[in-house]
Image (tube, rainbow, N blue to C red; front, side, top):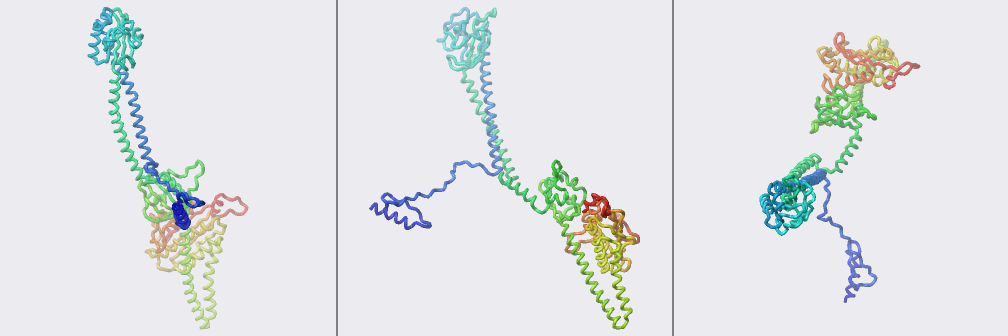
Length: 604
């Protein structure tokens, strides 16, 4: 039966083996050859009593503070109790010596010692017992020069030699010590006993039970421990309060989390394509990433040079709209500012400590695309107008031909084609750079569509090779656009139409210096605003729908002029309007064969 049951067990195990089958151990008597399967390993459970180190920063700080508080308290208690024991021993020996000195100062004691015999009831014994009871000493012993006792608490020991060495006291020295005698351990004081002539005839030894000294020390321990526990409790409460502050400040993070956040922050700040600038409560820079350094033109600091951290932003960037936006003097969202020819979109977010974090986005390309879009729209409007005008001219030409006025038709075509060709040829003869000439031809077409006459000033001539044609295109394009808007805008001093709606462009070369002037017959610029018109974001016109903002064109003109070391100014024109003058030194390339100028290389 046993073998049969084991056989069934083995068969059942083999039959149920497979996925999800539970192994069964064969019992004794099972079929030979069936290898028993080991039981599955049980997962280890964490021991409930095992101590685990805290992970959160606040908990670790609390644990360190508690360990320090306990350690300091224990050390302070030990340092207090250690000298206390010595002080109590010293006080006890001084007290014993005082008792011995009081006994030795008795005038009759020396005579009684010389006359009496070392037996019970002698006068020396009676005097010593009287002093012992009065002072509370454990014993008062008087001995002669041979060390024989004349008094003792135990009368049976009178007449016997003392158990400790009396040689120092008999030699005339006072002795204080903790020693073991016939009555046990005691604090002792010994003093020599002298006769009327000052000769040492014996000694007096007084003792205080050492148990009383130890009792005083033991009695002081609870009080000291109470003070220590009170100080420890205050330290624990302070540690708990500080731990809660650390927990709130660190938001329950661990040291590894903080280190990971710092690494992630550094990686994020230096990888994003948006400038980030952080300021403290005093307006000093405390963080600037790579993109912000590029956009602000700070560059990467070299070895030994300051990187701007810790410096006020006003001293780092100088006065201007950008500084006003970063310091919070100008509030708003998506504020525009210009820095070194770049159009920046700035957003500022204050922080709890009184500082701020500002983000910078480069909008230069977007502004350039916007201006190109405006130019394209203006060109389309001009083409549309020319299409209508061309249709009208074709109808006129058709009528002349149908009427048989062939000579009038020829004159009409010649006049129509010649006026536009004359304007283009005049510009090409006066302006040598093709980009600048194309700009003026296009602006003339747009001006004609708007009913504004755009012409070159008498004596305009700029035929030299430009160092940076795109910079002059930006400067002249902004000035012409500004003049066209001023002439086209309705106002008390702006005529509704006719020859008075005029924009005149002057181009002159003085050596390698280019001088650009743009005069318009618009409303002009009031004297109080002639400095403000070049500030970032300043404009007397409302923003157009779909456009970001105004007040950047003249600011860019000023930035380009300053980069060349030149100037830009505005004044009133004769008969009304405004005259903008830009002087750009080193804008023209040096003649071939002459030494190149460093400014030219920089402009390139």
